[in-house]
Image 1 (cartoon, rainbow, N blue to C red):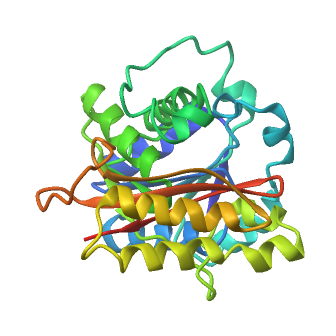
Image 2 (cartoon, one colour):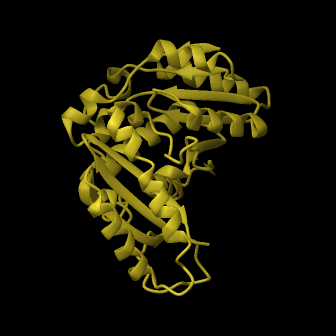
Image 3 (cartoon, one colour):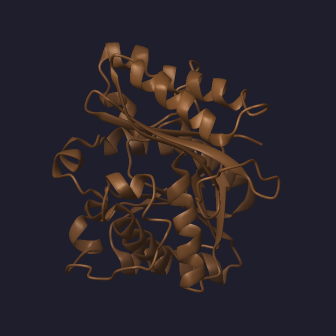
Length: 280
């Protein structure tokens, strides 16, 4: 497993692999790895012959400097974890390598970046598009793997690839959960003991909502979930919306022609948790 910090060396590694006929898979991460990230590597190992994992905490996608400062980082532990997996290269560039000068590009992500997370994190998805496009240019993968927990990000990256006319397959992978149902996230380690005990209430509520589909409209279920979360003494609801998973359009009725997903964001102490559940 090689650790590479520079874009030109990363390009040489993947060019060499491609010249040997190897299929290249990329697993982009911001580090603080957990089983969710590792499941993406497992998925890549079933499809690809050369696997690159990027570890880069992208400052361009943090609209809150305090959030960037507190984001968990433990490169040594991450690398030890990755040694147990069939990873060929870890791309771990410094900030100045990815942003030698300010990135002024503004991507047309409308309307996907205006709803849900976009309302609460202005500029976030443009920052995501900036770094993902840079990673794709550095690694030039055949496939890239992303978790469905970040459903909105997944939809935006698929749109980005189409706009850039890149021949990259975006592979979406299932949400990996703790035994108590909490969706795995690097941010979970920032929860206090009391907050961590309370956190599974989010998924418990989502499962209840999914069971209400028969006999209830999307808006009725949205109200049920919103009321439940708002009554919890430790939780602050940002949103719960039932949308289709491609255009993220809020659903008024159940439409069998689209995949319908309930997306939620909850503030628990100083940590913001997102999750989603299928209604199909």
